[in-house]
Length: 257
Image (cartoon, rainbow, N blue to C red; front, side, top):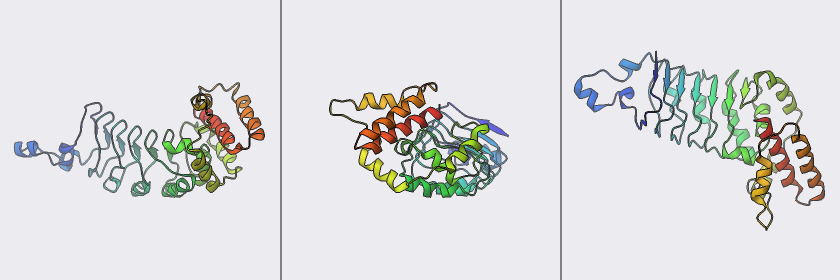
């Protein structure tokens, strides 16, 4: 069974939860009596701020493009395999994910997760139990502060089937490349704190132009020349860490497009 209630401006799910007073008064069945066998539930592009339903047979849940500020309660969804939470306002730890032992696809992109490198490394431990997981984390606030976050994910979660927009055919190559990189997480956090999220600034207002250069649309024919220029500048600049990070950000931004 499947139910698609996308794009309906829903703010609550009383009939699915079994708590609708109108349906109860009218004697209309609701809740688990009606939806207990539901396997696919699509609720994207609504106005939901929370989700806590008991759906024992549910395998796919799409809550993308809502206003969620926290994870759904996953312990009541024991068979869930696909969880789409992109384009919400979720932040905080990833501990709730451990309550969904059958998960195979998890999309957390375009949310409000804000971690330092050390904290992200710790949070990724919550995903170690999942074999062959397809994971999306891109376009969260921490991604700008940790240009090498994909490398960290591949190091900490070697069992991933997909990460962000990296093609399945490229995953093994990217995994091997990540394993050859040594990351100093504390130094990355110190640098991010010191420079306030990669601000390559000058007093004449050049920060906007600098960030535009880093995040401009990728041209794969010239991007390595661009990155070389960042590192050449770093050799001449006493504040070289920031410029190196900007170059790494340029590379990460290119790889994700």
